[in-house]
Image 1 (cartoon, helix red, strand yellow):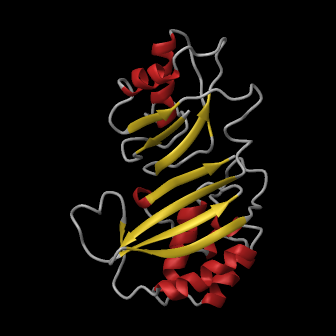
Image 2 (cartoon, rainbow, N blue to C red):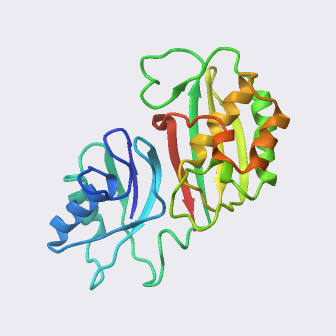
Length: 239
């Protein structure tokens, strides 16, 4: 299942007791249409308010679906306006949406001018933010293995090792920027913590060399604060 969603109405992707999440809404809709209890497994877990241009999930059925396109239409009629089921297709029985993913890409959007249209889905950057310096610091991420300094504390992650293959701020139009980061895996809260620390560099409150020192300390308290989730998007998952 390939889908997209706006994260603001949900308490993240993963099912949680007493909370409305993307996974719980889709599972309820799928169970209604299939007339039996259905569970799905996502390619990752986005936090509260985080968006997804592309999320992939898998689910098991007892026999091949006769009309996947119809199932897509039926689900979209139930899941609400903030979730869009885009495609459902058959894969090999041993395929896994999470463990078979080879890379994931996130985008973080920032705008440099105030807009009544952009604010719900992007971050208003302060004037004078030095994106050149931020890119100098971001380049260090390509040489980094241990991302403990950007990892949420007290999670069930067995390792904080990630391989980042792209990390760069790119121009979008006249007054927009997007931070694009691709890795084989991401830790809880990692992208928002990375962006928050890069913003410290852009504001002149941290040098590029100090950014490298933050990474070397392997201490979340040494890094910057996490950025708001509304401007973050799970952009692509590759297999």
